[in-house]
Amino acid sequence: GKHNGGTTGTNSMNGNPITGPDSAQARATAHEYIRRGWQPVPVAPPEAGNDESGKNPIPKGWQNMEVGEADISALWPAGVRRNIGILTGQSGLVVLDFDEAFTYHEWASKHPDAAKSYTVARNNAEPGRCHVYFQLAPDELHPCNLTKKAVGWGDRLCKGRQVVAPPSVHYSGGIYEVIIAGDALPWKEEYTPAPLTRPEAVPPRQHTPAPPPRAGSPGIPPSVQAALDFGASKGTRNE
Image (cartoon, rainbow, N blue to C red):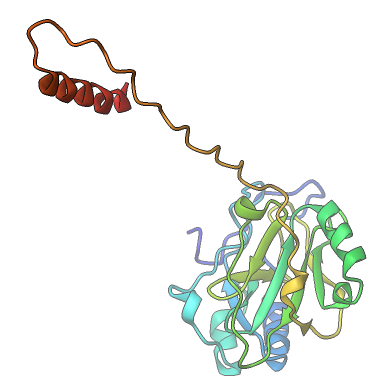
């Protein structure tokens, strides 16, 4: 099935099947993440050409799970290829997932020190499309998640989210790799890029002038005519 972590995709362009990383490599990396204080999660492997695959955590309730060293062999069983994600909230991480390369390059020139933080990229992605990791202090409030639909440049991943991590394999056959090693630097709110697109300003609601008073019809008292006029002006709202 799609989420059992055991299937392989069809052959990629170079003739190798697209599937998750070797289970021993995934387990070793999961231990390394835990030593950093990060929480890994098993992610279903990619299927060639399926852009929804390779990024879906397998365990139910993964948003709230905690993973320890003792859990790793069961989560990445020998001989079963699964990708690996990092639970950003449980790990105290904020990850800027840059989907637009030009935004990353602008951001990195504006925040050169922040751009030295721990960074992951796919080895077949356009340079600048990457994940930059930042660490929250233990008692620091988690910023809200941001989505590409809302901000245009990518996602800000924090509580209740996860980020696909090395040595995972993308559905295109690309491999996620650490391109800037070292520490995830302390998070600062000013590191969040400005939205690329803002909703169009809603034009101010036009005030509809009351209709001019009509000459009273013969035989209708003025008070009744006023009531009829009031009813007509109210009714125009739905025309």
